[in-house]
Amino acid sequence: MPGSNVGSTPLRIAVLGAGNIGLPLGRHWLAAGHTVTFGSRTPDRLASLVEEAGERARASGYPDAVDASDVVLLSVPRPHLEELLEQVGNHLTGKTVIDATSPIGLSEDGLFVSELRAGLTQGSWSAQRLPNSSVARAFTHFPDELLWPRGTQQRHFWGMAVAADDEDALGITERLVRDAGFVPVRLGGLDESAALEPGGALFGYFSTAAGLRRAAGIEDD
Image 1 (cartoon, rainbow, N blue to C red):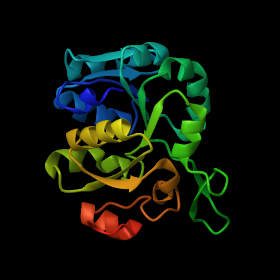
Image 2 (image 1 turned 90 degrees about the vertical axis):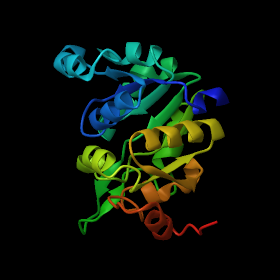
Image 3 (image 1 turned 135 degrees about the horizontal axis):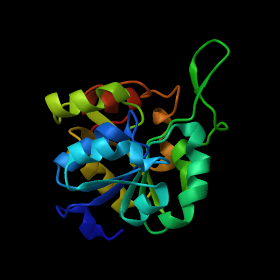
């Protein structure tokens, strides 16, 4: 993605999965002036949502939503992610992809753990799966039921951790975090984003930007 897209020009965003994460974020981004296409296996069921959201909101199948956009949010349940990428992987070439999925599992003693192999983050998994896209991670640790109320009623108070290997993708993701009403907190590259994983220091945790940095062990500048 060209660095110019990090500025003030409205973005064309595909939200793949209009559920507990994708729906509130899509509404935030529409309010910020972006165009949002909600991708779904059954786009007709989103007709009332799109009508209510206004002229910059659309609904379509997954491939068409990606083709109409420059930035793509992956917000389907993690067990459906592989199937989704089989459908749209070739359409994601050259696009910024924000992965908001979480490979949630439970340990024998009832603790959240990642279902990926040890040492592999979800962001790195997606980057390996999408070598021709610029992958970022965001919107994964914050309780999804709070994405709308905290982003509207207490704008720019709560921190949101982000990670990416590509500087342009990171800048675009930080912009969209701000447009959703949160304060971005950089964790580093995708290999350094383990704090976002199930069982990680930030998973399910919400705080101010300073609180996130402290919980993740990031020293202030």
